[in-house]
Structures are given as C-alpha cells and as structure tokens.
Length: 270
Image (cartoon, rainbow, N blue to C red; front, side):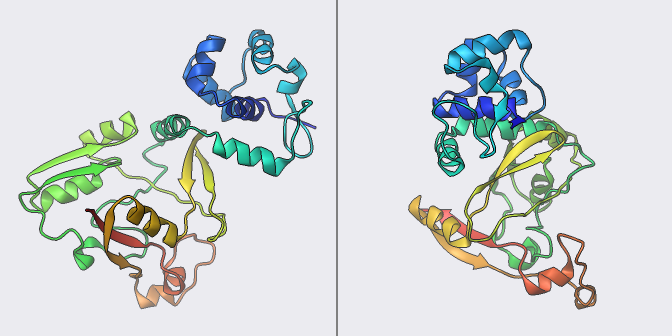
C-alpha cells in the first residue's frame, strides 16, 4: 500500500465525470486548491476529508491509500488498465487547459528555451531557408501560443503590418510585452508508436503533451479541412559537430544526423 491522496481524488473525480470547478464548488475550496491536490503540490485540510469521502461515497481511509495495482482501495476496485482507460476517457478539456495554464504561469525565464521563428526546432532548417510563410510584408498575423513573443518580433522585422499574439499564460504574455526572454527543455520518454498523453512536470507544475505519430497529425489536419501543402523532414547541423556524438545530450548534431528532431507541416484551411 502507498499513500497517494491527490491521485485518488483525481481518479474518483474523473470516474464521476466531475470537473475541478464542480468539485471545488461542492467542497468549498478554489479550483487552484483542487489542482494542487491532484498534482501533489499540497494535500487537503484534514477537516475536508469527511466531506470528500461523503461526496465520493467511500470511507475516509480509501482517500489515502492505493493498492499494488495503483488503484484506490474500494469495493469496486478495477484493474489498472481499465482504470487508466476510464481516467483518460473522462479527462475534460477544461482540466487540461487549467493544468497547462498553471504550468506556464510557473515557468521561470531561466529554465526553458522555447522555439521561435525563424527557428522550427533543434537542428532543423529555419524559415529563412524553407520560406514556408513567404513574403509577410504588409500582412496581418495572429500567433496562437505566442509564448514570450520571439516569433512576433521576428515577424515585425520582416515587415508584418499588424501582429497579434494569444497564449494560455498571462505570465508569458507579460514577458512578450517586455521583450521576451525565452527558455526551453523537452523530455521524450515514450515509444514513437505508443500514442499517449505525456504528463510533463517542471517547477512543480504540470502540462500535457501529445505523443502522436506523424500520420496522426496529418490525418487530424485532413479531417478538419486543412490542405497539406508541404511536409519537411530535414536536419540542419555542421558536419564537424555531428562527428562527435554527444550521447548524454537529448539534442545534439550527432543525433540530428541520424534522426530528424522536428517535422514541419505546412497546411492551410480550405
């Protein structure tokens, strides 16, 4: 047995198809409190345990412990695979947005190196080489997930007429307004063919990444009415750097010589 109250609360909540907002309102706490419980940053006050147990229809003890299979101890305990399946099927988009927003709010400027134009990723040809966007002089541009604004600055230098940026994080928007300091780190630990959402934590916050195959991205674009104009799988590096394979580094020229670190898809809505 092991104590894991936050994960148990999340599992029980999603099993009942209840949002963080609904649970917070019922228990009398903030959404942020629920988020902190479920991500392990904090535990609920002891005075709230009876109310939580009553709400989920379980004994108070069952809020604390998970069995060897990793599921809460209760009369209707199911095997781990079935529980995980129900967990992901019940995961609401609002929960993911909430988690991702909290994660980006907590990102420190010195802890992350994000990608911005003209770059498309580590050891990948730049927009200056690929020219996917064409001549943007006099154009009005909107960047969704603009982060700290590096791509917007690049577009302004290329002569864009008006620039707009949207981001899930108010902190990132604030940094973009100040003139942008960018940070980035990427962690890959799943199989390429195993399509799962990856939970990635940094600075005690959590975000969700999609581990999709290239075909899944292409099919998703096609399904939603996008015309795929070009797919680029290239690496850009110096041969001298690639001669020394830096195994300890996640991104290196040596690895880029063997496997393209980025795939660029140019598409437009029909």
